[in-house]
Amino acid sequence: MKIAIAQLNPTIGDLANNAKKIIEASQFAANQNARLLLTPELSLCGYPPRDLLLDPSFVKSISIELQSLARKLPSQLAILVGIVIPNPCAYLKGEKPLFNSVAWLENGQIKQIFHKRLLPTYDIFDENRYFEPGQQSNYFELFPDPQSSTSVKIGLTICEDLWNNRNFWKRKYYKYDPLEDLLQVGVDLILNLSASPYNIGKQKIREKMIKYSSKHCNTPIIYVNQVGGNDDLIFDGNSFAVNKKGEIVLRSKSFEETIDFINLKVKNNDLSLSRINDEIKIEEEEIWLALVLGVKDYVRKCGFSKVVLGLSGGIDSALVAAIASEALGPENVLALLMPSPYSSQHSIIDAEVLVKNLGINHYKLPIKDIMKSYDTLLESLFKGTEFGIAEENIQSRIRGSLLMAISNKFGHLVLSTGNKSEMAVGYCTLYGDMNGGLAVILDVPKTRVFSLCRWLNREREVIPHSILIKCPSAELKPNQTDQDFLPSYEILDEILERLIHRHQSVSQINEAGFDLITINKVIKLVAGAEFKRKQASPGLRITDRAFGTGWKMPIANRWKTNYS
Image 1 (cartoon, one colour):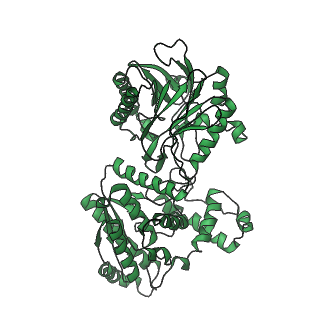
Image 2: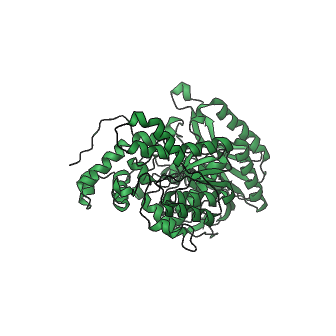
Image 3: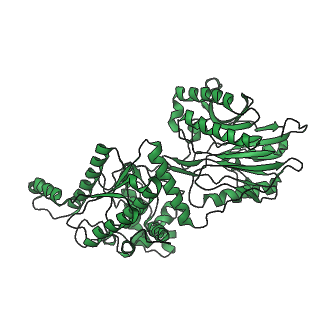
């Protein structure tokens, strides 16, 4: 039995075009004589729809589109489509109003509906807000072809349903394990329809877990995942299949829409070897592809075609410019060079060389005269005070205003260029360099910015070498460097990794070789910068602990970390 795996890139709420993608995939699959087509979780409406689910007209439109879709699909093909449907018992039983479901479509009809059983409520997930968990084990029987006398019993899981194997995780996160329940009814094949967001190393965990499950259950598993960017989330695809022995027999491409095929040998109910695309082994390449896809989809799905960014001659804006150029084409990227009297000549030259290397459009707007007008206007009010952070931030805010003027005049989306290290400790200016519609490298620490640029230069010099070797500086006053205020980025990023990602205590970080004064300073800076993070642009997520949807720290609080 030939099975098609459609790794699709839906746009949230674009029901008609999402349905069109499913129709096109089904026609292609039918032409290849497939019997079954798999699509990702919530493939008809896109994942995650968030509070669109509170709009009754949105939910009703999904139902109407599903009915229409069923009539347009090839009759000889069974298709599994991710949908949202109302819970008819919600008001009678005090349950949640909706189900996260999958519809089995065939011969112009909706043959069966299956409900997701495990609803995640951690990190970026908040499914209990909207959905009622399904209570029954999900499986169906499918005849491989019209002449078959024996059917294949297929178990269906939706994303999180497959992530509660107590033997693999050494504990259970939920009361029920849908996988165990499917084994009780004796399924021949297990499917998993997912919308699993990307973070560094996620695919290795998925493959390890599902290989373990298939081997110990002696049952083949096919996993199909959404691909593409939706707001701050990036979905990497990486759909794959494993046989009864826990061996990978198919792997789709990363970060691309694909349709792949695999055969289920009905005689022994196992999967044949199919195309196995190479896994990405270099993290920098994986991150690069994720960020490029994230920018491309955010710009496209938000209705923009061109972007603008400030180019300082520093490494952060250089990387963002390179990502944008790759994602959108250099002709759709405008770089503003906005030197001040404190901008070094080598930074101006570096920015001009980068523009030439990338082939992007640029315009130079010196801000010296604007700075003087501010000085004149504020002279009487600031009389008797020393030059300090207020004057430094004015420069940044001038640049932010110019970027927004370009955005308003020409309809370009502003890309902000701050990195995760800066955002963590508040080394950034509200309404200045934080201005923007998308923070491209908000989840990329400074040390990783350097490694990405070095990787990008592996074949030719894209990022000028002089940018890679100079001391990072905001250049808002003479001879300024970031390390006038911060620890070295190697030390800072390691402390932030331990604090934010590993949730280590002060004593644990201290035992790892970091001095208490530095640790305490970093903790204080992180806590004090929360009000800035709440006002930041959406930032693309590449780690399992990003300053975005899953970050839910209070701004006003008096908790003091025990520094001892």
